Amino acid sequence: MVGVVIGALPPSLCAASLCGTLLPTVRSVNTSEEPDVRASLDRPAVDETALQEQFDATIAAGHRIEPRDWMPEGYRKTLIRQIAQHAHSEIIGMQPEGDWLLAAPSLRRKAILLAKVQDEAGHGLYLYSAAETLGADRADLTDKLIEGRQKYSSIFTYPTLTYADVGVIGWLVDGAAICNQVPLCRSSFGPYARAMIRVCKEESFHQRQGYELLMTMMRGTDEQRAMVQDAVDRWWWPSLMMFGPPDTDSPNSAQSMAWGIKRHSNDELRQRFVDMTVPQAEFLGVTLPDPELSLDAATGRYRFGAIDWDELTRVISGGGPCSVERTARRRAARDDNAWVTEAATEYARKHS
Ligand SMILES: [Fe+2]
Ligand SMILES: [Fe+2]
Image (cartoon, rainbow, N blue to C red):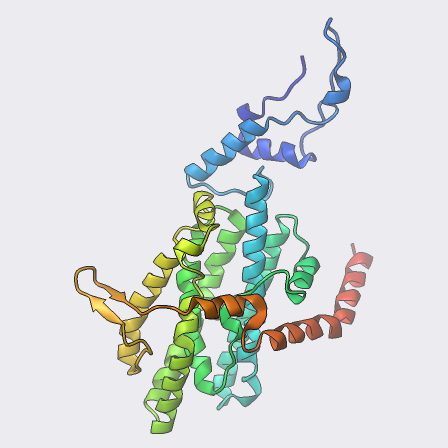
């Protein structure tokens, strides 16, 4: 009898067998009285139940799933969708702040902003690369973004009206990103988790530069202080929406948490962000635009007012203030620079 007991192999070998490349194809040699089953054994025998059990045990033990490992199709698709959406957010997120590169108020501010925007491009690169390890095609993901078939973070459809917005994005938007992304460093998918470690270190710099810029402006003129307050008023609620819909309206969250892709619910992370940010706002000397914001003495956590979920729905459906402009710019960047991609591809082909 010929067979492969997948469950008895170490995880890496189990996984390799599924790629169909690393383990030799098993062929039968019929020496018994049994019927000839060669045709059905020309492919490696795959015991799906054993593989699923192996996957579940890896997740339960808090270990990582790597690209070579077997994984359920739903897990792979969920990861591609989440990582692509994250990558798109990094790339589209370069636009609102990039608008200020030529209008930065000093060479120092320009150098800081340039470094930050370049970091975001790097984050997009790590994330698209992580999606590629799951079999996604990067050009295809970009097409899906441009055609509106994949989304990016709602926050990046809002305009940056003054230089204070650069500071507030660093403080609130990168701050919210840190809350979201630090738990992803323990995500069950190896390439995603490892990318997040470096991303979070850089996001920490982004948040500090934003807060330092705002502190500088708050020590300046009345007009500068008013600019900071105005920016805070515009960005506070969209920052809370960055954590996604409420848990009661987030049907995929439970499965993502069971798979170890997500570690905390949207509402949990949102609360953590509010608790972290309110004391920072007090230190900065700005008012957060929520009359219901108050400390719950019993829990030590802040209560906050109702979020306009209709606005979030409108924005993520392509109806944000700058949605059309953001996508059009990304499309132009792809098309105008197609010759660079073609030249690089041809160069790589010649030297491979
Ligand atoms: Fe980033
Ligand atoms: Fe950032």
